[in-house]
Length: 286
Length: 292
Image 1: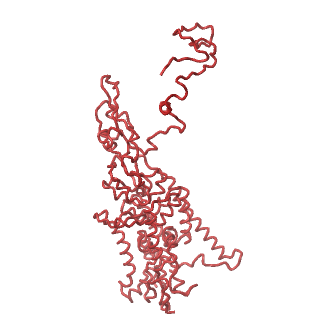
Image 2: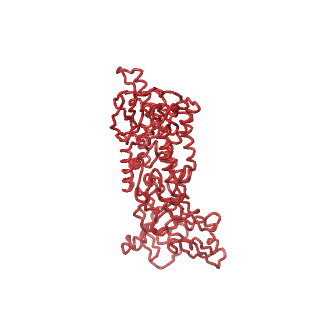
């Protein structure tokens, strides 16, 4: 086990490419989504218009962030049908696929906080003043209260997720400092501080994906050699244990909806313990 | 490095405050505290910075500012759909609340497209789809704000704001006034009429001065408002086909009862005023002799 460079064993056994398969796929997906938004303003090819808050794909398919829509309702505004339909489409997708798939595969802030987590490991930064992981539920509730009290989408003033994504396509301005703040917070103050402890969007999508079908499982858990590499790379380390060590559950499936389905544990495991599967896959070597 | 043990995993073994339970409650309080603090921060910040700068105007059909801040998803579809690229999404630190669309008339005014493409794809109705006639848009209201530098007020024939107005001769008219400085010329003063001005900003963009003398302002800034109970006499009169209080109003003059008309002396020993006419004085009041 190496806390600075987890996954050495996996690289040695499976080869570099196989030990980075899901990471590469994920980065491709994240950058691909950004590219789809970019080729409109850059090359005039409008596959998708707008940003993650709301967009229009191929001039027909409306998409709206359901979390934003709920805040809108809390603020006392009933939006037009397009936004409601768009939010339903997005909600159903994440309901099926897995709420926090958004965090790992779509959200642009993920690359920033992943970079910070990588920096922490690489430079051995141990300082960790992370708030309780339940803080995010309070932030989530607080954003609705703030919307209700101010009658405006209060969270949107400082939401680093939408500020990042909007900033990339419409101009970042002072929003850059929000990103720097999130990066430095994650790097120097709190391990996985933003995505794992505070971000209300992540926890909203987690609640949405409570029963999602797409899951990571540990079918070869008896092969586990306790190298801890998966725990080191996992953005939500406590979700692995129940499935891997049968702590409170028999199923080899990682059932916690806080799992972002990033697949990094599959990558770094030299013993090929993990695989991406569906919720009802009970195959297990033990 | 191993994962931190779950702080809230321990279930209390005793009903009293066992260390595990104490830890659980402390963790919960910490979570609640930090969570609420962050959300409160957002709320306060939103409350502080919700004001729109005076020069930042909303796209056509935008709901009133209060509603707009609840309704706009900050997606930028209106910005993308504007064929003239004159709309912007506010960046943090700009003149408008983060992410909301606005334009600065002096830089790039609204071209008032007849099909209003910016409204079409608005997913929430923050830009009201009921606005189908661009002439009915009210993005702001032009105000000839500086009478000291406006060239027409100086007696010249600039007229540029009037000429570029898409609603020429309705939203802006040239009103003739005597030029008292030269005493022999006319001044043609650009005059904005709120019932026609759409607030497109063409006049402000075109003003030839270094700083525009005519500016488009958000309507609440630009316009006064009469008290709800105010009635204009001449309008009421027209509505009712005649004065509601009689053609002539006579008010009693307290303290001068019994004196002849026109005699307003308090001191009876002062010399009596000369009667102005032979009309008999009216009792208990003053007859101004004004007839409409």
